[in-house]
Amino acid sequence: MRNLIHIFVFSLISTFTFGQTEKESFWNPYIESDRIEIGLKHFDSLNFEKAYRIWTDYQVVELIKINDSTYNGTLTNFVTHRKSKKKNEIVYQRIKIPNKTVEKLIKSIRSENIETLKDCSKIENYPKGSDGKTYIFEIGNGKTRRVYSYWEPENERYQNPEMSEIKNVRNILNAINSEFNLWKYFADFRNRLPKGNYTYGMIYMSKT
Image (cartoon, rainbow, N blue to C red):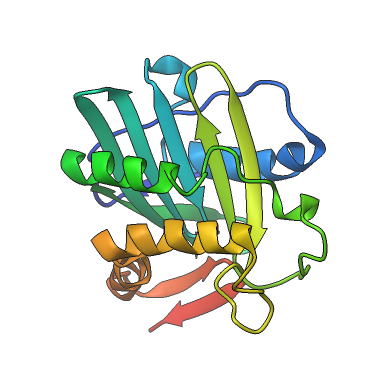
């Protein structure tokens, strides 16, 4: 098992697995591996009403509604530290999201159909690519779980801004970024890393 470097650890969130579609089966090994490496629990170890995770290759936002008065949330940034050809480790940072912000975001992004959006592979004429940024949405309600993805939803070159699903996904991301700038938080974390070789997404970075 690869060693984990804990930079900030404020809270632990969880996931669980049920019946899977073909697309969910494709993404599950990736997010499950990341979940383990950054120390997040399974959803089924907690009692909650709703849980949303929004993943990229280097970051995950977790928003949890335990009940009408209790909310939890975290933002986790992570990279792979390439120590040698045979030895790597995950470096991560966990930041607690204020409970009031979690409550506000859950209400906001639920209105953007986060629980029912189609996977982008199910949308006619949705563009496909092998690189770029993919957002993976993991949704739980205490009984069921679903996983779906959107490739490059913010890209003006590839996407039709009038497509209802693109509007929804962009509004979800805009709502989160209006509370805390996702890229800025990751860039700050990345810039504070010690000397070494790192990867995140398809990026290789050497700090000297």
